Length: 311
Image (cartoon, rainbow, N blue to C red; front, side, top):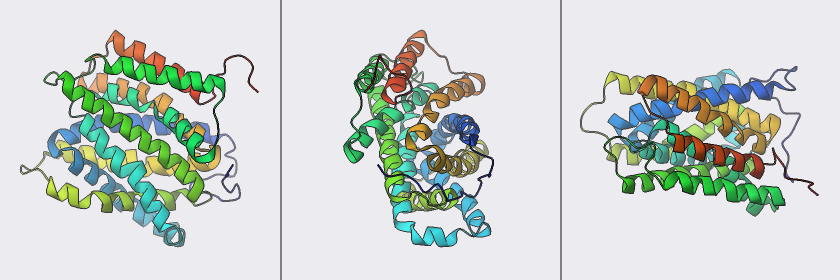
């Protein structure tokens, strides 16, 4: 098993931070929960690809000065290729896919589907690192994906003018984004272990920006988006992406990719709260039932909960 270098200190690390990853986890959940709110607002006027591109561009512009101020530019130059590729997998593709999905489904539903990330992470780790899951983890994978199928079987969480056919594509887009996150977590573990979190975060956003630049220009909206949409994407880029990815990569350094991906337990809680309060979204009983099934599956598939004795 590949491990990160415990002697490497991330740019925001504290010498007394043995359990600080728990605080990072909650803060990251709050930031990424808010990202679904801002993505829905921005994508409605910009479109999926331009909204995702503005998000990562703002994040890159926010992170670059911090990178130089912290003296981490050399680390980025040394690992820029891996950082750029992981940025495509961890930001460029999933952001575009979620923005596309949020044109059809509510932010709460998208966040519930986002909770499948640890399951995809477990599958990728199984395939990549030959970490064969235990019996309870396999049961968890089955339960979790059953919950996704249940959620996709009904039109809960759709916009008022959306169709069931559109919901199918939206759900598939969310699951594709979650698969990207799972691959990116293992790729970070393999290729960027011990690299300072700020350098990894900055490189990933630069890579995502380059990846999305031309598609965004091609699909740029003819009508100038409103100030509200611009502000939503600026906050999305600075807080929910720039700061959040420093926290995320620091979590991977401190606690490992499996624990870092459990942030998706918290994201739906914050996202549903924000969507209900600020967007007037309605949460159905069916969504809550499916969310409970998915969370049970994630808890088992990540090993947080075990069935009986494990070898």
